[in-house]
Image (cartoon, rainbow, N blue to C red):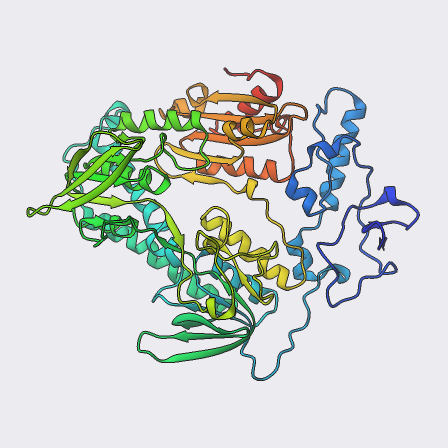
Length: 589
């Protein structure tokens, strides 16, 4: 099997393009030469379906992966069935980019042997050890780069592990269990418990234990993969130099070939309101309150606001969320899902003031806080008194004091670092990923970017389809989505179909007595391609990954509907919604 430099395909012979195994390289050849004479391992060949192109995902096409998603029923006619077998052959022919970079498949994207001068301390220096930074550092080390990771905090893991994703999920889970035990839910299931009480100190200990275990796990992974951890505030002091300044003022200079900025984000301040992390708190302070407040006001009903508001409401606080926009759940959420989500949270006891702005907050002598609000469009002012004010209006990139100005790297108007499609700044060997660049501020988005960025340093192709990055709100029920919302499709003028399935009609949800919510699927009308999935319900954060996988490979709704799902499971609702989108009708609803 040979590599055709003109068609960029591997084939049994250069005169036989139809036997191509569809394994184009992921970018230009690296240090090992690729020639048309170089043999490759024998890989099954196939003839791709002529209608496959209409069903190729953008990431699939961009990565030149096999365009063999066959949309029509394998049981309809024998010809279409054979196209399905073509898809199987396609799957056998795939070789992941990770495998190519790791093993240097016959010279394609092989990692070069590390060669650096004595004065160079590292091939790659990562500033920041959050989800994007630590994953990038480990991946770089696995690819053969001598890697250093600089972290300003005492513990590794960044905001996510220490004061974000992880501790908040511990409190969300434990507060949900307390809510079930303290309310009527257990009694309705025949479980009668008396004397239920909240030990908040113990709950916080469990949260801290989880955080400690995971941050310690990163330190272990660094040691295992030979990543050098340097403590201190990392500043770029030259195109090939990072200086780490410790708390005691001492410094350590790292001479490096490549620099990767992964410093994450910080809480966005609210004009006129000073956060003291006592009774006017950010998301950080809200994770460590000493007691359950009697009344809490949350500024912002986006993802963080509803999650933390839900925690303290379930633990007994009277919580009111004030939101400038007219819906809950933040940006990107489908409006139909948002309205149903709001209704469920209100039924649980969470209060909302939508299309409302906060104009100020005043501390009273008794320690309580008067929060002044009014309609977003202007109108009569109102004062809400609370014990704790939680400010959750979003986050901003952490890019201050990194030395970017001295290098001529200018930030955009939102404080983000401009990069190209390989995450390079205007200085080619200085990269940036995660919250400091454009795109959603999500831990898993940063992880994906970190892996792809260092693979790019090794000579691989770099591509991420942000349309396939899922979002999750970890309340109960959860909300999760990936792809386009119905509002976005209307705005873009895309003709689409909708498939819905309520969890009230799902057998597993019924047996669990947890039937709030639904699955909503959006597909392209002309091709049946899955364009968006929106899930409101228990376990939505797990289910959305099936949708992301399907979209990643350009699957049609029928493709998903033809996959056998175990019974009884809540994920059957996802299959049923795809049936409804593709055929116009679900089976069990």
